[in-house]
Length: 139
Image (cartoon, rainbow, N blue to C red):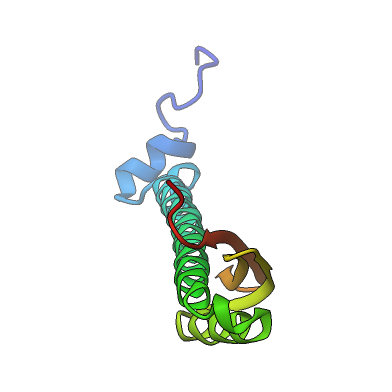
């Protein structure tokens, strides 16, 4: 005998024996599955991040629209006083999905601040705020 493993009359072990029996070696099972799961998880996380950014941008735009329309509608009531102008601004801001935070009459200009609540991800609530000014054209 030469002292090498697997010589004549000795059983072979490990991978060589597994190949002869038609069985896959146990050290290589499931590696691709783990990699595929990791790649899938990365795609899900990127998708969630993109959805959160999109929701925040949409809420910001909605707050801008609520403030702009509220200021325009309230400026039309500026001659009736601050309470009438701010009441109309709050009504229009609410109809556009916002909530009136601040309203101030500055001469014939109406300054309005509106907010929109957004939940981009479950458990993560944020508020988008926007301000607008409306009044007569000055030349």
